Length: 119
Image 1: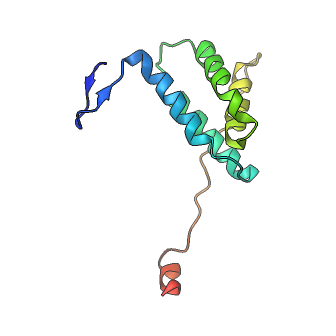
Image 2: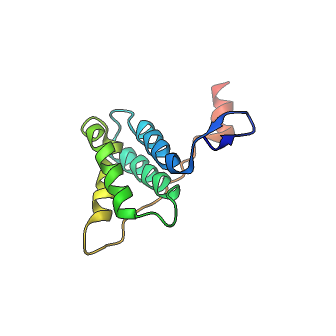
């Protein structure tokens, strides 16, 4: 371990952080059935989360293949994991093509009007 954080929790070695984040990402994505549009949004967010924690000097091809191998068993029962796997596969194809990634569309949930209506 590298030490502890402010709450005295153990901090894993730098080389372990990517694996832990991959497992966390897969578990967050593996929520079972969801509508295809939502699965697309969640899967893209998972890919961006996973990509964002990778070290800059790391070998992307190796990391992406490892992530794909680890996530693939969950893809059959989780549409969001399937989207995550599809993005990883697309990123490994040659010739390289830009991936279509987007943050979820913001949706209003009613705000003050909905709260007043609930009273």
